[in-house]
Amino acid sequence: MRGSRRYKHVIETPDPGKWELAGYEESLPISEKSNPITRELDKADPNQMVQLLRDCDAEIFQEEDEAIIHYKRLYSESILQTVGDIAKRVQDIIENPDDGLIVLSGCGTSGRLALLLANSFNHLLQGLHRKPCYTYIIAGGDRSIVVAQEAPEDSPMLGAQELERVCAGKKKVIYLGISCSLSAPFIAGQLDFCMKNLDVFLPVLVGFNPVCTARNERIKGWTSTFRQVAERMQSLHDTQQGFVLNPAIGPEGICCSSRMKGGSATKILLETLFLVAHKASSNVEVTEKCLLEILRTYERAHKVTYAHSKKIAALLKQSATSLQKKGHLYILGWGTLGMMAIMEAAECVPAFHSDWRDVRGFINGGYQTMENKEGDLTSLGAEFAVSHEDFVKSVLPSISETDTFLFLFTIDDELSEVEKLVDLVKEKTSNIFAVSHATAGQYLPNSTKKLIPNIISITWPILFLEYEGAFIQKFQRELSSKWILNTVTSGAHVLKGQVYRNFPVDFRISNNKHFHRAVSILQRLTGHSQTRCREALLQSIHGEQILSDQTKNTEISRHVEVASLKNNVLPMAIVSSLRNCSVQEAKTRLDSSVTVRAAIEASFNVPGRKRGAESTEEEGRSR
Image 1 (cartoon, rainbow, N blue to C red):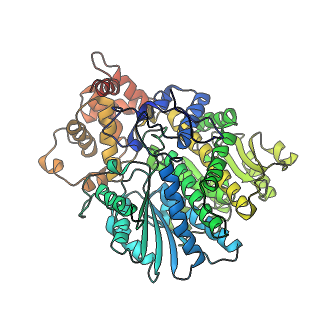
Image 2 (cartoon, rainbow, N blue to C red):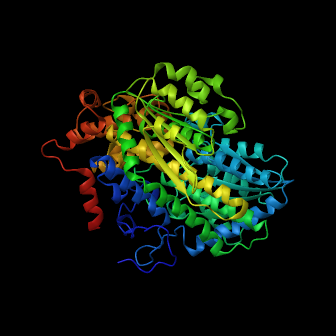
Image 3 (cartoon, rainbow, N blue to C red):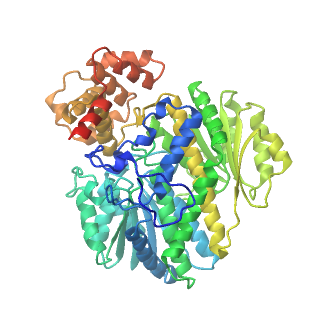
């Protein structure tokens, strides 16, 4: 039974989950555990999927329960205190920006969010006639905003070099390194650089695992593990020379997919921190009440968004139908909602090994609206064409009735532009949806309602919080759109057969983290030892039924290099392990199966074999 809550919540947060119990997948960090809520996600219908993922997202706001395991949570006193302490240091930079800088850095989703947040708070400052002082770093550079570049995440030296370049000449820098699972070598290298230069840098590590479960594997060409770097950061915390901000938010709805809850929690946590700092610079005292007021606006966003669950489920179902029929999901957004569309599309490729054409995002004004440092990247190839004009020119002529369209906008956007694009699309397909955001008292014109048959109309209450209130509402709309997009694309790929239970079973193995994740998922599904699962993965990567000593002793980076260019690496390893057959036979079975999930399910049903995920769980309970 749940103990009493310290705070009044806008939403009904879940009671502690099974994942919090001692012995539940105890060798894994929280971010890599499977969430018991979504254990049967692959058997759910679209309406059930939305409800299950809604409940997973609500865990972000769950309070700690010391009667089970003492995980620090978003509302824990120590986390709120740390947010307040960092906010005071941010305030100093805001008020004295000439020689100062606030750097947000991340890989993949975290880096895209770094761009979004840096731009948002620079705009907030400009509106107050203050000097912008935020900037971002994303591993792999600006091309990673649009097209996933996973390999640069593995280089601590590259991270340190990029940080040094960005901060050249600055005398005071607050660095916030985001690594949801406390694992990215790129971020470890930057933290290490900061700790060697504490006269200039205040380093902050942001993630969602306890430090004791940070990744502890050796980093190629480097002297430390991520855990060792995190432990050094923890030792700086007491003297406030550095901070670790790492509330537990529970496992992801789709196992290990930190683009989902990890990304949402990053946005909530850092926007709250920066808003508090900006309020403090306007002579508002930083108090717990102030923090709670802001956090509750995000809880309200959860409640308002998932009040539209049935319509979200309809969009999910149609998107899945398109993907199953070799069609596409196109997401066209305005302003920062266009940025959410581009983020979502970029993330589907590594998460589900999808083709970059399957899910695409477009933003009005293209790179000018995105405000990335390197400017227009369209010349790099068709994948980088992201403006609405690019869509009309290169995509519109080839769309068909099997494609699905989602338009993301606010009533304050240029609705005539929305209607014009919808008119063009309607000539090709009837599968048209929209998410429109309005403030109480605003209404969609009838012309827009008649044109778009399926509209998720989200109305937000008016916020009387002076200047920052407009930004809080913008942040709510972005988060709401992110939750909808995460749910729709994840659910669509589940229905397409890319997920078994809640395990992603066909992601692209494109860096060190993904290699270890693939081995871990193999272990949990087959019940085999880590050594045996690693060998099965290597057999699948290299096509060797009997591994040579050279292959066994090769650096992981080389295995990743080969795996990143191949399809069905993890599915072949799973099927061959379950059936005790050759990789070639596994490939043949996958090729003849309707979906990856169906091939795995059939392999579990081979007469005489135990179901690995269930048997290993029983062992965990009996320890």
